[in-house]
View 1 (cartoon, rainbow over the protein chains, first blue to last red):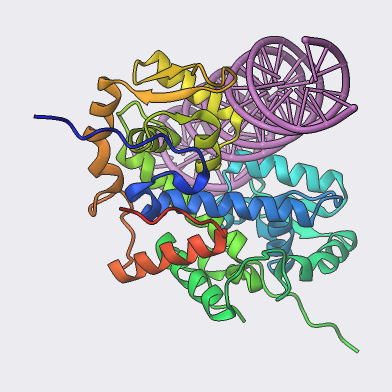
View 2: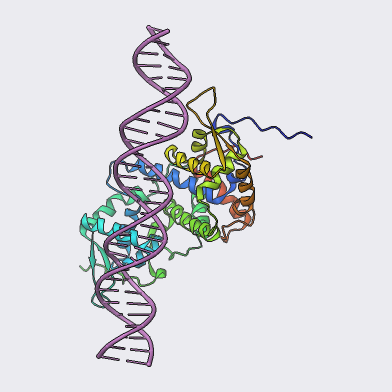
Length: 161
Length: 161
DNA sequence: CAAAGAAAGTTTCTGTGTAAACAATTTGCC
DNA sequence: GGCAAATTGTTTACACAGAAACTTTCTTTG
């Protein structure tokens, strides 16, 4: 009895076998996010901006006075990390932290004028139809992808106004 | 003329407004990957296994003798990081590095018997139908999500045998 | 009202991942 | 053949993200 011979070692990307991995959602999510980061950096090269920062400013703008912990929970950012992000944005003068009288453990967040201007100036770059994605998806596919990602995440977000 | 009053600050997750962010693929990809990590850790709690390691072993098993750089390119892992992962797996006795005669800059990778057994033992946990995802997607939705993620990534993988 | 426990952030420590410089080898080209 | 340039992988330095312990404030309860 003879064993099946090994296939020849692949020499180019097109020859590599992935088997079931090519259908693994965990793997595909990672690949997709790597691509997204590449596009993000290509687009926002010079601007002093990190991936998470815009989201933070955006949500504060839409929810003035939100507590820091609720913001962290909403964006799936760990509290320890949120502390650093907020401190940095405060140092930049984009937001203000307020300790409310009612509960002096918590922190309320509001944008400054500069913060609002910053968000407004980059709004279309992030969220506009002509965004930085540069993918090949049709608008219908893009919506469907968003729907499936939400369902996969098992997260509910407030119906958008 | 009066300005529109600010909405009340949200106090619970259901009250937070996200606006267009809830449709941003970059944001949704991040959320989905965080959930995926949570499920991964919940499932592989005790086992000594990191997210990227199984994929590396799996691809070497399907492509014996693959060069390290081609493996890195395939999995979108940076060469510097790949060096660490490979060294660790070599120390664990799961794979062997070979410097070929033809090109002594490169490294060829093959699994040991222990490496093959390791992959075989965890294969179904990773790639089986009853995998660790625990999401609410139907099989059709899961396939469609995989298709859209691939298209979003703009990556071609070899047709799976 | 005092003490115990819970809640909200912060700080510290550790690991993972990326980027940039480096060493070794091979290829291309006079 | 020999030097310049490109390729392959490694090392080093650093930024980012997570876990756990800590501080302060609030709530509960005997």
